[in-house]
Length: 290
Image (cartoon, rainbow, N blue to C red; front, side, top):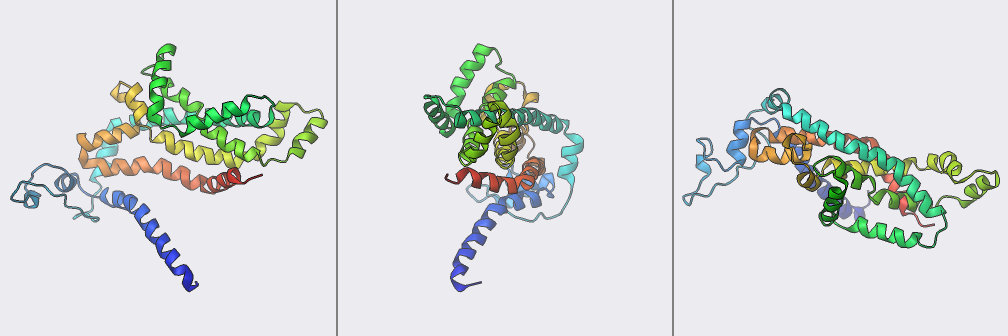
């Protein structure tokens, strides 16, 4: 390695360590007993943490990476004594899977139409897509709430799933890749008598696998972590997704917070590991200029 590359490598390693440390911290602390978690990280005054209070009554967190004693108590409590966890897990799955399937069907078709169908207003509509994509989710909650009331689907998963099905991110990414698609292939298909649908199904669709896989990774992370939408639309506690349950564990049962966090990370981590090559390739193809 050349000497001039050493500062860059140091910056990369430091950045990677900072990014990975929270995950390592959560995983290691998941082997801590519930009583030790409460003693270290809660505001409760216990015999085990009384020495951490100053003369002014201020409680300091006793931060530490390694537990005093490694134990599987958190995982036992989570998997054997907390049936609500599995219900919340499947609630999250019921929210995420329809969004992913719907986006994989709708986004490529919409992007193909935007790129190949000639209509003078399509660029204006696509510009509106980009504006909506850049808006924070919290701003869109109000119109979504109003429309959900018109459709009589408030307090149901449809109020969350339907807006996510038509999120413009997928259309934007896929259209960017279609801009680089060889027009000669489309023209040859048209000369052979293939219509727009046959051209899409037999020629275009098979070349979108990378960008669609990248879209699945991004959408999974986005919808697996929904909180605001669930708080607004889901009133029944038992219908909440795992992301909301994770927040409630901190206040309700902090003794198994780290184990819940580990299990919450696993699906997102698996999806990323399986799709990281597609994610890199798909985003790279979407960013290449014609």
